[in-house]
Length: 72
Length: 270
Image (cartoon, rainbow over all chains, first blue to last red; front, side, top):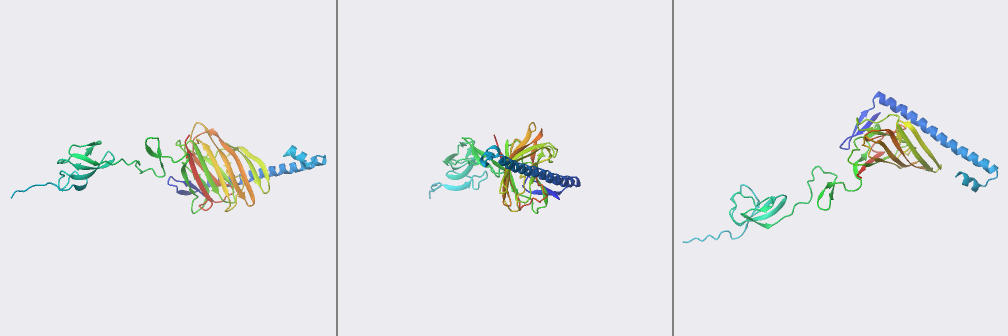
């Protein structure tokens, strides 16, 4: 894997990642994927909880407009 | 038989004035001469010898002015590529053509084999506001770091705080994302699409200043297949230090190349 560094004339200089940089890169790719998956899962859970909450409010007799006024 | 010398029967054009004319200049010779940046035409009214036609803007005794030129209003062009002529109301000089000036711009490296791109030496004290716009049209998302001016290496300490507000249509949702103590921050936080649409805009205020913290606003719009994402937010690095650029890389490991990556950096003065 390489990195590209911009030069003053607009060209690129490509250099190989050092083994330490490669390890850091691999670790960060994995960590970021896990972080974003966790955040996506939290978003999905929130959406599911919202849908579940709406259903229970409807069971209590609220109209869809009333539920939307409360939640949206 | 008596000989009558009529002198010249017409004026003689001698071209650009020379300090060693052959034959020597004489009355009614016409020359071109540049004095203090102004090229004019002069006529000899007596034998001038080596006397120049004009000096310091004053016509000399052996010459008269026939036609006065004007100074070239355009300053020396060498070393001013990409600049525009600007006026202060009384004189023109080379300067910035508009509110925003292009600092750098182009495509990714070719052949593309780079996971990360370092836009070094794009920030300085010359401008206060900067915009970095880039398009990474790839089924990948981007992570970014500031580059330290002290050694031109990316700042990877876990000290970035970022926050974005994200919306999407088709699989509609909206949500907040953000984190403290991060080693970088996102450009487009969700995947774009190969050969799709993707544009990220970072706006900075004086990132080169060493006495204040560097931050930037983040705006990204992109399509992930049929889903269209739009998010805006910002980031700040926790310590005050001078930054000279940014590092951008594909967070899922895709390559940035001349075919999928375009960028431009703009600067503006206050």
